[in-house]
Image 1 (tube, rainbow, N blue to C red):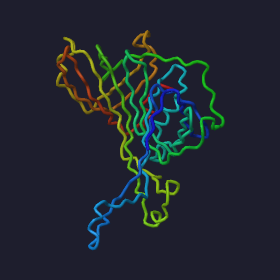
Image 2 (image 1 turned 45 degrees about the vertical axis):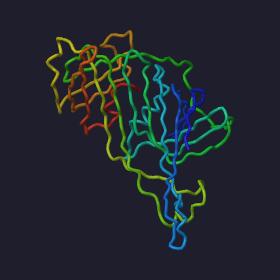
Image 3 (image 1 turned 60 degrees about the vertical axis):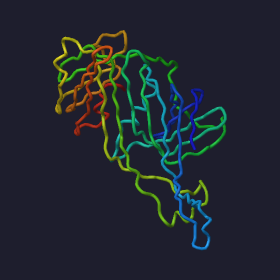
Image 4 (image 1 turned 30 degrees about the vertical axis):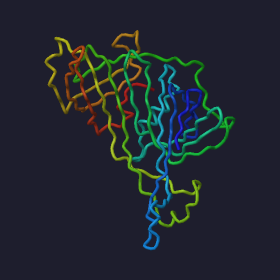
Length: 303
């Protein structure tokens, strides 16, 4: 089953005993599939049974995604916390509620697997979220009472930001755009057992995933700049021991102003490549190599 709901749907996150309303800019989508095993039913005495039988005893993890505009008030900060926090090698789990014009759905034990920031002065600053959960269920109609919701700010002020980037203390100019991606790679622990499979009769008692391990975490992205006489010699540059700082500065403020968002990686690797199109551009593909700091420590400006 899969669902995609328009902006009129409301998204709520629940963790730490609190529920938060999170405003999204695009459709909220989520889906869950069931694993189907086929088996032959043709026998020596009945060769006409050519269509295989089916057995469904387990559900796959739920996939979900949505995009959250980041505002000056920072009411959406729980999303950043859930993306970056890691406790005892486990991501912070939470529940998702999606309330539409006709129903209320719940995703249990969700975790965020990827967050993408696009620092571009031509588009509203936002983070695109992808994640997985263990169980999807319809819990009520559009009037379902979710209980106490944390108070929101009286205003919501979207903003445009532009990137300010330094590599090894060298300020980079002529920047076109910058992306930052935080990725949590999960491996779900096998959860199928013979005894449990014999008890499956419908979706209410089907075997579902419950535990996972974080295989690795990645902070990476791309920095794009116009190629000029000042940076033409960097066309074949690379490094595996650089200090990279990326700032998202609110449009209208000076480059040395306090950033709205900042991430600092040391050490980090990068490779440079040139693209010849209508204009010459230079791209830096970078990745954090820092194993001494946690991701909340690498995000040095937001909260």
